[in-house]
Length: 474
Image (cartoon, rainbow, N blue to C red; front, top):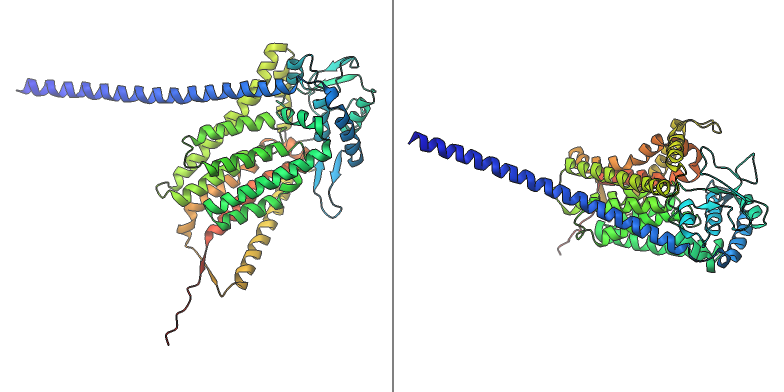
């Protein structure tokens, strides 16, 4: 009897081990399937990226020459830095806009693969005599050894006065499949008007969806934050517009299909890859921070099962996946280029990344800590102004609405994940200190994430309710 009981115990233990091994195996298989899915998605995106770039490099630059020359004249009048108004510091960074037009014109359709992989400036077949590799450190202008003058450089190149091209291979330059076809029909001024029209449509669409899914208060916060951070001015910038469009479109798709998206992290991964494809190292983190804010807000409103720690896990995982997606997309460009052409791009690109991440720049006197401090103070001023404005409006409507403060325990758990997302820009600023100091003219727009996040945290502290109408019996 005892022997049979022992046998049963041994059998049950063995069976239990088998079940555990099977469950472990199933878990490993599921993880492997996820990894394979990411790999296949990435390979598919790389294929699409290369096909788009190859296709846009097939037609000759003679088709865009007229509008490139017109654009050069327009940008020469504006100069390298274009100030919108005398009374404010909002400017457009024409440095990069004119470089993008130069690169679009320098595509050689007789050698399309090398053209879209190397992405040269100042190149014209039959005119160019020598070529320089991707530069380390500061960007250079062939026409000016003393200062960076890309506007003057394009003008001199079109006049046939520059015979040296420069490679800019470390980026994907994913704007080329859009910019080159547009230049067939439009100059830079007309393209900016088209971008403004697109930006207005995306703005209205996003705000409408936010109102429907998350409420009027959230939609107002997003709308005012976008306006304050110069959203409509971005449409003037060929450099920053692509990343903002990725942010807006990905946020719209997320809101439209938020209940149907089964794998948030795969979606974030795809966004990150596309961001790197079109980005010129401008404000890429908005394509992580803004969709992530929207997703967390939606879940907080509609899913009572998730706790604060669950949201923190989502933020950490999504951020990690975004970094991987952005990073390997960038790295893949260097690897593909060096495998085919063996020009030492990987070494040059890594050196450039290290240079951009340093917190010291010989041309600047301000430290990264001072710059970040200024950005923080400026945005806090916006926050207090908007908060005061909201209180004044509510006081004026005191007959209809009453405002009271929630208990700390009620809003603390809700605000922690939102506050964590709002800190994302500061990670970028300190990680890429040199880049932040050099490009403050546009890099400040990363603070869009901070502004939206902190305003939502302030909103969550208060309860705004309509007063009940008193009923009088006669």
